[in-house]
Image 1 (spheres, rainbow, N blue to C red):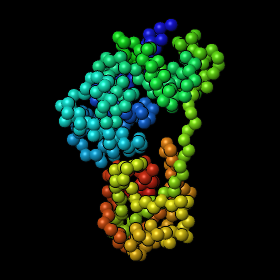
Image 2: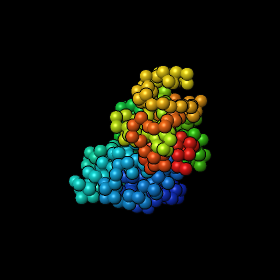
Image 3: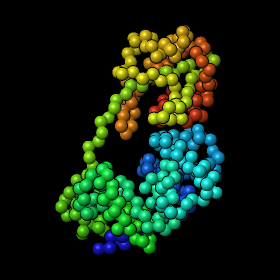
Image 4: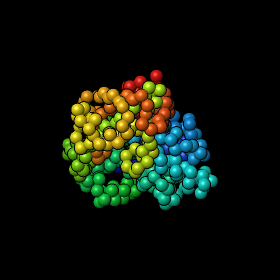
Length: 348
């Protein structure tokens, strides 16, 4: 069975129509692949279209202000990828005159571009036989060949990369890579795959052994950390609030938030005024407070769950310089805070 040929024929008949499928511009492919690492294609399409409308070339992205880039990225998560996009665009313009390097070895040296993205750009845009390996590829290969090596281990990463490399069509690597990713996304899906009509089912180990759900194999996930966030939403009589930039490294770097107080457990309203961190923020400013959400909002990240409450703090005058309430929506913020802003009505 010619694995690659079957996949590319399937792809030509079944591929979905997305704008990044109609170009070999490395800038467009780069942006699309980074977005698709964040979300599924249908959900990522509006972000891609908005991003390309605002930054149609690498030159436009390089000249942009980082906060504008982060604002367009809002809702996708992993904001470090947006920062890397911006910084790498500046580097490409400065070092390569706006032209992307055409080899895998040069691409992978760029900030924020790893094996997957470098392989995608090199194969799709420059015809290099560099195999992509993502979650879809892991699923297809592990099921078809019956490989039980955990995909989230160093051994598994090496093994699947080596296998994918032996299978790639050297004469048509771009279509091969897009075919296997699309196949994993729409045919060999994580749950309820369409095995009956699968063009690979006659040689698929998982299908023959009725072990579809057993692949791919992953090691157990790391322990999830539980954190309690309390955001103080100041409202002054002159309709101003405090909205600050997160400069420290970690989650949400360079995004904006309301003043944050983290506690070891959910903060009891009766203990609000006695919290030392809150006292420091208030600076003896007279205030009235109310709890916006009695039940904590749970925001799940890869290795931590944030249990969040928003406290409305009404003051005559802010304890420090703030911004007009009407301008809050202009700043890039984590989706957790952006959702609160929409629900609370700051844009009104």
